[in-house]
Amino acid sequence: MNTIHQFLFGIYPYIALAIFLFGSLARFEREQYTWKSDSSQLLYRGSLRLGNILFHVGILGLFFGHLVGLLTPVVVWDTLGVSHTVKQAVAMIAGGVMGTICLAGLLILLYRRLTHPRIARVTRPGDKLLLLWLLATLLLGLSTITVSAGHMDGHMMVLFMTWAQHIVTFQGDAASYIADAPLLFKAHLFMGLTLFVIFPFTRLVHVWSGFASLGYLGRAWQLVRPR
Image (cartoon, rainbow, N blue to C red; front, side, top):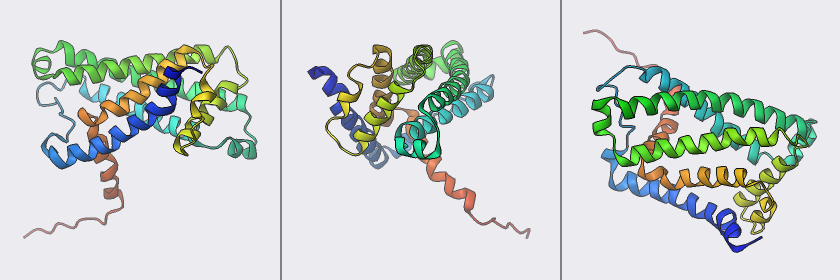
């Protein structure tokens, strides 16, 4: 295991998460007016609804799928009687479905933003970087499915689970578990980690507001009476 690998997958995750958390707090404190999704609906509504729904359904499915899949201890799956092969198959199918849905939505939004003159004029370089970075990360993730299909023993999946769990529990040997992982997996992982770095500086910050607004689901009905 070389120094670059140790930095990228043993140290960089903590740098990315620190920027993600403290960068979000700093932006909320200093630039609350920019804390929004910058919707372009007023400029052009065409294809926005379809692309928006597909993208959000897909990316939320991928996010929570990765969260549960990587951070659930192996012993839990073993106790439930779920073999590594079955878990890998489920992860590949679910990831493939959600990834395809997300890709379709992202391509619609990207085409709409880059080809419609009025929207293109108000699209900032950061918006383009974000969309293209998401596209590259997504394509790399979908490409790993073909590699995973070549070895269905679940061994590589367990190694990435161990890596993620050692990262969140601050164990210094995390990077060693994926030292021999295929380059495609490492590239996807690096791109995904870097999304946390660019998160506070792009429109992605509106995700925080989305989670915060879930409290409205349990709020009592507001009764409005006529005069």
